[in-house]
Length: 158
Image (cartoon, rainbow, N blue to C red; front, side, top):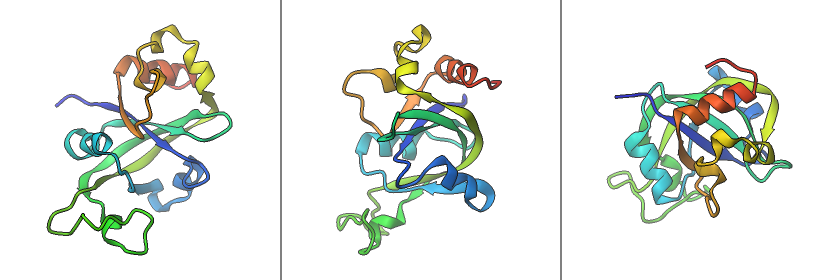
């Protein structure tokens, strides 16, 4: 299968790229996704080696802050079974999991975040899901040309 590209949103007050950089092996599980379309992307389409743009939402300004790589394909999101977790879902069980997660590993942190307003000014990104009106998915596909354009904006190589 061909490599795919993704954008994953996180609120930096909850979990930032700096938090990921400080993790052992700079790796974490991407848990707590509670949208079916985003879950389906993670469960059905994300594969080891796929590239991810990390995006700080609910930030000033919202921005792409770096990249990561999928290092473990989907498995049940165990936070859904933890009654003390904010992601608890009584309809999910170990025998019939409703929610899934993947593991990501930090690839690079951009020297300067690329703000949402700056992305909107780039013609090559006009069709990017992130920039479409009403787009709120926390996990979304990105085209290779969009991924490469953002790397170029960040001064990074493909």
